[in-house]
Length: 370
Image (cartoon, rainbow, N blue to C red; front, side):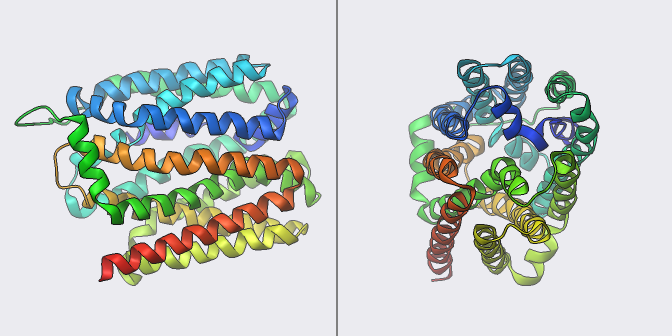
């Protein structure tokens, strides 16, 4: 699983993802519209995939999902229209919703309970290292052509799909097969976790928007040349390796306090990006934002997994992911519309979303401490 996620980090077009799409005819609003449709599709697919995983096994789900992931990269390389980019996103949505919850459920079922936060941190770190290497290589590929960055991304995804065939599945023993309706009710009864999931989804969407799409517009606004985008992305990924040590921060300060502090840092960074066109301040803000988000991720995953005591783990994690997808779908449309107005307007939207996420987290924190 470490090797697979490492290979899937090799997204060579990542540092120029927005410019690549714009170069092939998409506007910012079209990019975010496709992203929003993708979130809606993931909402539709999440729970059925989770149920499929619990019923037929994690390995089968991962094999299908990773092969779809591989095909989506081929279509991305061939895409020159809204329709083709849309098709790529449909396959990507099918793949990600299949992987979501299933990969962490497989890992959690394969390790000791007290190792989970450390293992999830490493799992995120392997993905980050892959993207770090890809970002450095991207700086050289982009000199040749933007198209080459998409072409070379296909190969590691093909290897990852093949390696999925060699995963050792965990035995899922049920007295009876899990019922989808019962799993859904079980997940929704845990209102505290749902509040946390919604809060984390808002923060995650802000970080996704800033680190994948808006960063490139902000770099250009700050006078940074496109040839440095790959190096900057690599720097961000080095910072994201802090996820490996997330468990140390939560052990020292506690999970809730750690998350609260990291939320504040992300909110401050978004606020700074509204006003600045200074290159150094831009880079520092995005570094802190990405680093904070990478530490939050394994902590949230650990809380979610520890809240599950029933056997239908993948289904419940898929329900939580679906709730997050609902937030992501709406947030993407709003960010996309404001990004078409101006880059500062999009960061104002991100700041407001961060504040909403912080309020939701305070509500969650008070409920679990009562």
